[in-house]
Length: 75
Length: 79
Image (cartoon, rainbow over all chains, first blue to last red; front, top):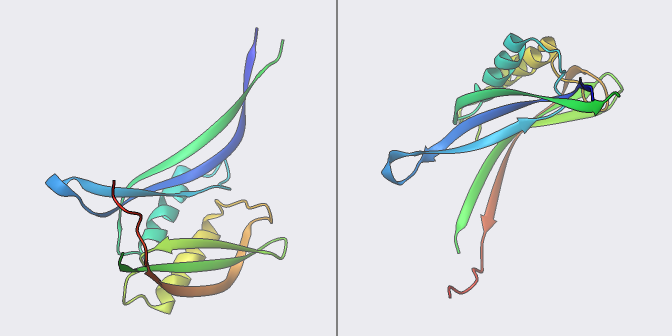
C-alpha cells in the first residue's frame, strides 16, 4: 500500500489575548482565515497576521500556518 | 442580563473575479486612522497569500468600524 500525500488547503490561525482570567491566566481566542495559498512564504503569512492585529487592541500571541494534505492510496 | 458592546473592523477587498472578500478584525483600537487601515490592507494585497473562491485580492473596496450593542433581556433560570 502506497499512500501519497497531496497538498490540499492552508489556513492562517491567529491566537490573541482578550483579557486575563482568575489566577492570571490569559484568556485567548482564535481567528482563522482560510483560503491561504498553500505555498505562501512563511514570512508573508506571519507579516499578514501581525498587520491585521496591528489594528486591534488585542495582542497577538501565536501565529499558526496550518497546512492540510490529502492522503490517498495509490496502489 | 446585561448590555454588552462589541466592536469590529471590517476590511473589504475587491478580488480578481470582480467580487468582494471581507476580513473582520476583532476590537479595533479606538484611535484607528484611515491611513493605518489602508496600509494594512495594501500589505495584505501585496503579500499575495490569499486565494479566495473569487480569486486573489486586488484592491480596497471598503473599510468599516462597526459597534454592536446587545441588550440581553432574558437569562434562563439557574437550576
